Amino acid sequence: MKIKKVEAMVLTCQLDKPIMDATYTLPHRSAVLVRIDTDEGISGIGEAAYFGGPPMITKMIIEKELADYLIGEDPLNIERLWEKMYQRSIKHGRKGAIIASMSGIDIALWDIKARSVNMPLYRLLGGCYEKIRAYASAGFYAEGKGLKELANEMASYVKEGFTAVKMKIGRVSQAEDVARIKAVREAIGPNIDLLVDGNNVYNAYEAIKMARKMEEYDVFWFEEPVPAEDLEGSAKVAAAIDMPLAAGENEFTRYGFRDLILHQAIDIAQPDATWCGGITEARKIAAMASAWNIPCVPHSFSSAVALVSNLHFSASIPNSMFQEFDRNYNPLREELLTEPVKINKDGDIDLPQKPGLGVELSESVVKKYRVD
Image (cartoon, rainbow, N blue to C red; front, side, top):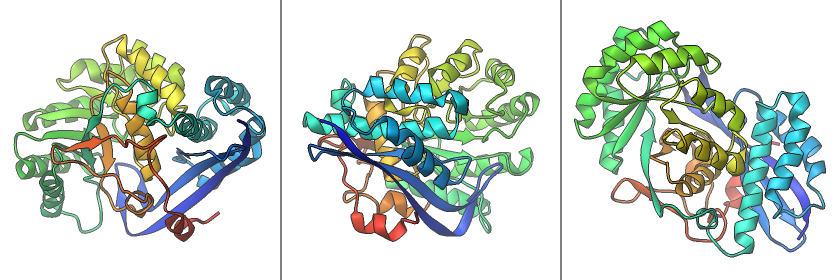
């Protein structure tokens, strides 16, 4: 089997009402999908994160740079191809868009491999779990969203069946955010896990102060309280607070996570298979984390392809805990697949049982939102 074509597709949907985290306003939902075709008629799909830059940059790296290293190669030699691309990344700094681009390619290669042996990907990778507990990732800031609206939103996810929810903090004062957390806790009740995400907005002192204010509301974890590059600050926060510190969505490859772990800067690792180096690298990160008894909870905040890719990764490792399930409006999640991803009655996501990623793109939806 040989690779004959590598294609990147940019999809975009404008939002009627932008959503906001601590530092960023999101006016649209976009995704960079990767499709790899082979000479035996087997094709694979993946997704490359574009966060931090225009998605067209990611598309260009995939098609104008990395594709040349793949055409004519055997797609089943995934480790070899990963290393081949990684060696090319030296001049790019081995972080950012080049690693994200590699990630989308890597996922598509794994899709091909699992399809070629007629197995669901998570089973090919070891099949640790048949289902993964999901948490509803939402609770963003938005124009006109006060305490009542936020509380009603988060309570609605509990009614849908989620047993854990996550909300944003950091855009307003600590006093205002504590009021938001209090309103959400009262709305969801005492038996639902409440996760809080600071999106890297605080310094160590501010993060510790905020964590202590949140303790009475039984916050399950404090996510990314300090800038991603502030390993010492993250370690100070992790040591000082009485809840787990989760981080890693902004980190790349096993080398970045090695530094997080050695600095004792995280209690929970959050690699994203579309960002950190693909499923190949995400599994190495998870294995390394397991040596320190650190759980892995994949970040996922893009299209349905990203969600399913991280779901297969999560189900293939023994130290997984949750799967992030973005609940903000996003047709690239809800409409993109012929069979959308849903939670079951217990708040878990059942793993797809068809070969590969186990999903098919709706070509009409791809055409509707494609902009490249």
